[in-house]
Length: 270
Image (spheres, rainbow, N blue to C red):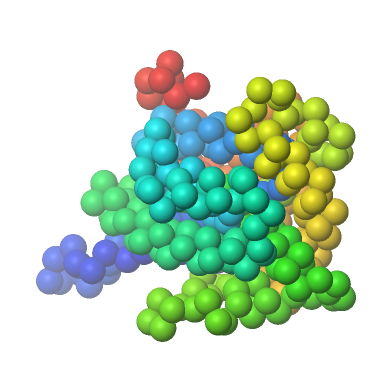
């Protein structure tokens, strides 16, 4: 269910009803170059241009840490980790380390997003996750080798990497809704340009992860409650965005209510 953040203050001493602010956890997932970036940008523009508190967060993998985007704060740690993975066939367990770090960061950001929604008196806030539980399951399948049936929560989040007092649970990392973009492997390869600074890494990701991405959705733990929507990664960007917004409007009444709202400063949100 979508997360609801309640204000600690009541409106007055005679009205004990607390104000509620819904924080929607919306994820996009899929293999490298499937079109997540375009949809992340489109959704961020859609919500922010209509006054909805919004954050784009990395849900699995690594982040660049270059400090060139507001949703990727400068970080020597992440710059090191990104370069580390780009240059080597790194152990699967090292990706688990980064997943835990991202999850702990996101715990703080989600709390901040709830506070922003409360202070701004918004009834809805959007956390848009770049990668999520399908990416996590893909890595778990590769780490565990041949796995029949469902992964366990412990295979998704290895217990030996937990930090006492800061434990990450599978339930906490599940988004409300996840849009799983797919496209043929040859199409994904064709989208990697010759001058892409991460070309070697992206090519490796397309060929080493593709088959496991296809089976990861069906291998998610039995406890999964996330709504998963499969989308065609070859469809026009605007068409896919429209389909996503239709699903979000059906899940969140607040998204349906803003569909008639004209965007503010439209020239800056495209």
